[in-house]
Length: 174
Figure 1: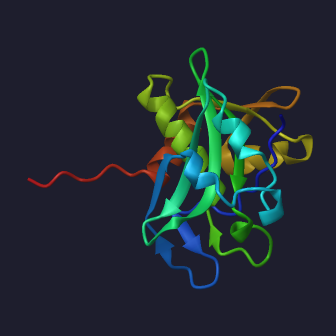
Figure 2: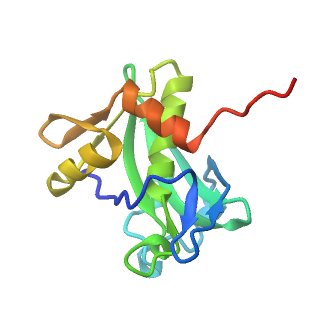
């Protein structure tokens, strides 16, 4: 499936589109109960229940610490040979269009998949298939590289930039 997600802004977390307030976020695994209300009638585009049933895939949600019961976005991915493959990503309907509540949701989720790729020893490398019209957008905003047709990769250097932006290392206290 070709992905169609907007990178509206590279932030340090998610940012309130109206006030500029930056919220701390968590990316956590999705469970079946999380998907109550996540369907097309509620404005979601994809069938996340079927994605959750794919045994090789992990599905995670982005939540703000101060709004833990509100899913800001979802991502689905799996390990491949030396990289992570991102199969689906979607902003919550709350975070779409001109009236969106938060900026930085999709980039936060992409950075998370890069972070997992780094933790698995894949250097942060992720791959995904892009809608043709968005290829240049992902090249500019994420540093993604087109490798064939609609296939794109975020390599180590640009993955590290995203990881460092969204998941900065905590300074150790002496």
